[in-house]
Every structure is written in C-alpha cells, then in structure tokens.
Image (cartoon, rainbow, N blue to C red; front, side):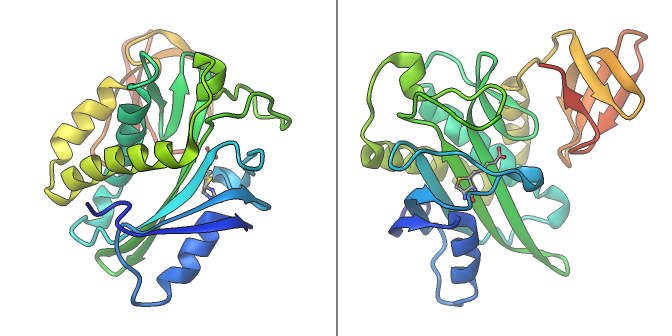
Length: 246
Ligand code: BTN
C-alpha cells in the first residue's frame, strides 16, 4: 500500500493541503502519507473558494504523492485517478456517483466531495502532488452559500465511523493510484469519462459567448472537456472556460 502507508492526524489545522505542502519541504516525507484533521479553520477549495466542514463530521485530508513518471502534460491523470477512487469507495454505500468535470464528486445533482490537487512541476517533471479531499460524511446541515452540498448520512440515513471510512477510502485511492504508476492512462480516461456527470445529455452550459445547450462527449488527453452543440460543432474547454447550469 502506498496511499495511507503513513497517517498523520492533527485535531485541527488551517488547511491539510497547506500543511502537506509544508511537510513536502522536508525531503524525508514518504509517498502516500495522509494528513487528516477534524477541523480546518481555513479549508481551501478551488478558485479561491473556502471549504465548509463542521468539526469532526467529515473526512478532510491530503495525500502526498510523487508521481514523477507522469509527464506534466498528462497531469490530469492524477485528478482522474483520485475522482475514480472516491467514486469506487462511495459506490459501496450509494448506488451511483458521478464526476462533475473536472473533479467535483456528485450524487444525483448534489456535491458530496471536492478535490484540490496542487502539483509542483520542475522542468519536465511532475515532482510532487498534494491531493486534498473533502468528503461530506456525517454533516447534515450546511451553512455556506455552496449551492448543493450533500453528505453520505443525508443520502443513506446512516452515521459513519470516520476512521473506518478513511481506511476504506485510502485503500480505494491506492488501487487507482497504482493504475497511474503502471501508466494505465487510457483505461483511467475511459473509466473517468464513463462516470462524467451529464455525459451525453443535452443540458445548459455557459461559456465566454453566453448560455447554450450542449452535451459532453468526452475529455481530451490533457483533461479538456469536449462539448458538442446542437449545431453539431464541438468545442474543447479548459477549467474555468465553461460552467454548468445546474
Ligand atoms: C473544491 O472546491 O471543490 C475543492 C475542495 C477541497 C477541500 C479539501 S478539504 C481537505 C483539503 N484541504 C484543503 O484546504 N482543501 C482540501
């Protein structure tokens, strides 16, 4: 086992991703180390957003990875593997989980987990990666203005043991990360694409030109979203160039 081979617990932290980046400066850190906490006072989401999580209710952790075999151009494979690992874990409790591109984990129309991956690139090498995961487990009331949060407990009515959930999730993530290390990039992309929220469904999107109806047809090798329009043309988008209308 790589992911979860070492686990560091801190009762509270500003952000597990920030803490993980600090440990990375200590060159003795071990690949797969998980830093987890019960509470983050400054939890970070993507695009400068925060991450809401009630004390002791959810899984909040970051994983140290050294995916040096991955070319920086292929770095999206890390996102795909982490997203799939979370879905593999969730699907032992919940019938279907999808991935809202690029890496929001959804159950039906609601967001159950967020991922913040921070890569360090040195020349032509992906030197290290901090994969931060916030998974809503036992929280049932959300206060922030996030549009559609949901938790495992809200869906199943069950209270989960966080430590046990972390062990199981780490093992699911480890299996997927091993696919990265053995360069199963095509397989990962196929499985990731098959799990996409709104794959092949006509739905509303917004891009730089305004609102339009489109359908997701695939994801390119470098992680760009391919969307077909009603007129039959297709466009590729990088992160932040397209928004889903929910
Ligand atoms: C998102 O905006 O969807 C990404 C959220 C990522 C939140 C997790 S919680 C653990 C780790 N530490 C952070 O500060 N952020 C990530």
